[in-house]
Image 1 (cartoon, rainbow, N blue to C red):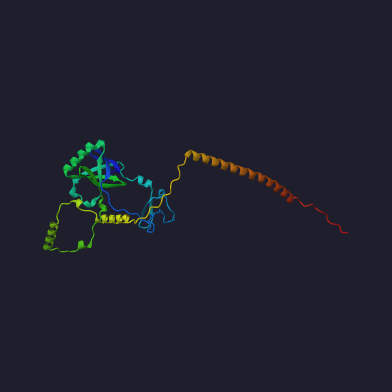
Image 2 (image 1 turned 30 degrees about the vertical axis):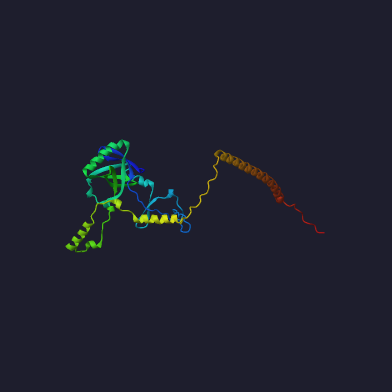
Length: 299
């Protein structure tokens, strides 16, 4: 596993440096969107719906849409002043019985590994927490989001479980809750009896994802039957370029271009001078006034 965050558990005057790892992974068969005819990948572009232009990622900002449809655009500077902790600390707020925390609050689990210098205080806090039967309620900031979390021990390792905030839990507002539905004692006793017949110790290894396994079999069958689309051939890379030779050729090409441009300029200037002289003589001739003639005498 690769750590995704480094910080420390802050417990009173004790600081335990740790590394954080994702404790779970979603195992699913991932797909790409492709062209049905040739299997080519479908690519998406960032296009502004106002002007229809493709937008580079550097020009993309976060926008909050109002009920009126207007948009509030937030920049990086707007986020810099927000009170989000950047101290990389897991602050212990209190200790509480685990059964007081409704599992609906839990969001994601992480393993905590101690740094070399933090191994002893890590083990000390771990053993004390485990013997107390409590869980630590903490506050932590991960991925630009501050969360409540719990700290408990699992198989000798601290597990940090981030939690949703109370206002993120929806209230179950359903009509049947207001109805007066009567359950007879005999029916309740029968339901309890059914539950008791199905009581067993939970062993997660007994369960598996049947859908994912069946889907994987379908894919493998297609592979065995050669029902695959060949990947497009990549263009072969050209021969390695000698950098010095390329630079030398570029310099020579630039010199030839300058010499050609200079020769063309001199020729143009020379031709232009002759044309100017000829044009000046012609203009003088055209501008020369006609010789005045006196009135003709009648015979």
